[in-house]
Length: 409
Image (cartoon, rainbow, N blue to C red; front, side, top):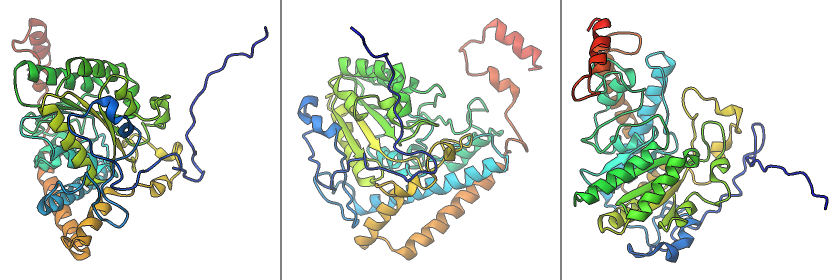
């Protein structure tokens, strides 16, 4: 019998540079339409939540549906300021990179709600295992911006003493595990940390973070096996911002339909949420955190959002996507959406927003000046070479002592 030659299917994005942006494949549920299940619901009973999108804020700025009403007014105003602070921080650090003050930077533009809202669902002592685009976890926990900038500049006051790439922060006190440049490793680390917490009969939970592209790594699947088998108290976050550094999310997603659906194959409750809706992100995070604290096991959350800026300062997105694509993104801007909601409720105003933008930028610039007093990449103080050898072993082995002596330390 004659058969046709075999061939591979290579997924293609809906549009290339120069084309008309197209998000017709993004099915968006009406705000407030997705049900809120009981916290102890079984994965098979809420399968539909892995294919829909949980939304709270409608296009008029109203908070509607069963996932609404969890945040008091002051927390909403604070949440808006956190997102605005992260955006201003990004703008100044991106400029600093262009000026040669640091070697590298990665923006959060368009994704501010994901990490800023999630952090408010956690408790003191919980641990995040983040990627490089969750600095909002620190901003929303009042981690000093000066310390963040010191780390970006790798100056003499860098808390990591120049031993990490810029934006790879670390703070045990603020529940922010050291970022690893080897993507997806943080997923198995988070599950292991959560298992250890349970073994010790502790009360702290863990949160794992990964981007859509890195879900293709084997560590992602290994983490889901252990999380589901041992019912680890962990929240498994997938930030689907549509693009890896140069490939669209369809490459990593494969034939699963959604990233959230990956959890169903492991018996893990899975939800998709509007990642540009601060209220929805917070509500879903609270639901998953309660599950973990009640010993009900892991939850997988897919945040549907969009990376507006470049992947990093080493990337040129115009080479692989239309320049106007971000403007066509149907879920809008997280800062503007929360601002609209607060104005609608009489808790904010256009004038107050302009004033807040100025105040926040003044604070960011003041922090930047203070950090730059300690040095930048090419000027001022920097960590000692001796620091390379410190903090690696409890007792420094002979070969490292010899290396340090040869380096003059």
